[in-house]
Image (cartoon, rainbow, N blue to C red; front, top):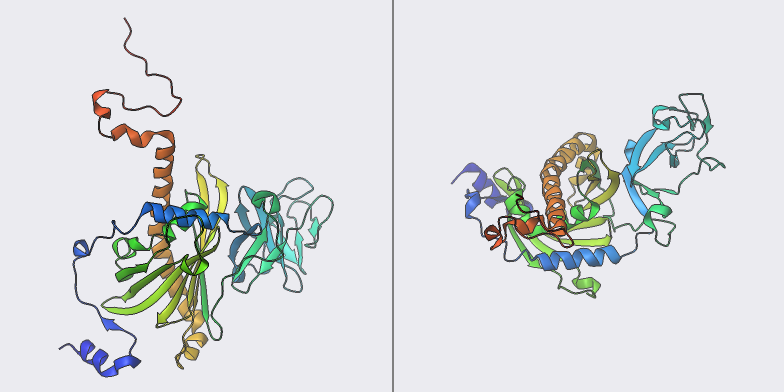
Length: 367
């Protein structure tokens, strides 16, 4: 028996890890039969119908300091900063004078100073420059864009319940060529976890998934998953639930096991279209870790050393999952324009394949 196994067995319940057997990736139990596209699509449709109050996540609250911070939401260029009292200020990044990029300016005594001619903005609206509603929840910064969202505005965003007591928060952000729906749909497919991320997850079993349909009781509108987080040969088994409180947010919450109460919030913020005409979306993920173990207080004190590793782990996952989300977007576009039909059975006989609806007949050879 290895020393690692003897240590795990002697520690008993006080030891949160289990020693994972060596297993071939390709010999996992396949999950494609359980990963029903209809279930995922129905869950996504229900999420879309929930109100957001027109709020969008900008980024980590800690990233917005005494320097201008730029963000783009649905094509709108924004500048963010903090005033002399530390309050979050957000408005258009275009200077009302001659259009300079205010993100390249400076903050002096809480006022934003334009780099071209020194125009000062206090963070309050003026006739030629509207201040935008902003919200700082202590982990993330939000902006409300009523013309973009088109919903009934609310005074605050829809915030998931976060762990009480000591916690460590780490935020990471990456952008990809997809839409916000593709990010959320990725998270509504927990079945891909152990296949696509074998370095992080193993022994994944979806215990329950929401039923199809438009009207699903709130207590059933969740994915309940048993999964083991992998740390090399060690694993940490947990039970987690996945829920979507609003259209651009998916929350994973640990219900049982080490770190019970901890959450991972995945927020999808549309940026607009890139130079290639494809949509761009930024995924902003907040990992908020909590533990009832007495030693967790020491971890909180060491959080400046731990959060870079937390961000690194989230970055690795999302580098892969953005490929997944981008592929979802590509497949959806192929379905919409009929490209996917070109290789369906029977299309070979015509030489041209089926045409998208409304397309003109293909021209034949001419004499």
